[in-house]
Image (cartoon, rainbow, N blue to C red):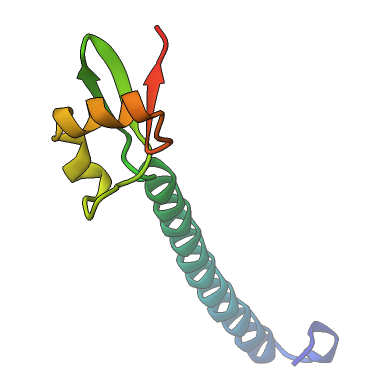
Length: 101
């Protein structure tokens, strides 16, 4: 029913009730959309902050960044093997980078 079609007080009340129901539905849908958007932003922020972990260790009084694993070791395992890291530095391997202060 359109407001132009209202011919009696009873029809007016029906029209108003219909409009109120529509407003309630749209308000609930808006709240749901806002919650979904907020969750999406929160998940994106978590993903950004949970980027790949950096492995920086001190070997021979130098800060060394482990770029990738070698010899069957992953970055985390390699970061614990200071002897191998030292050998990789001497070889000039790109698996590790000596960081300057």
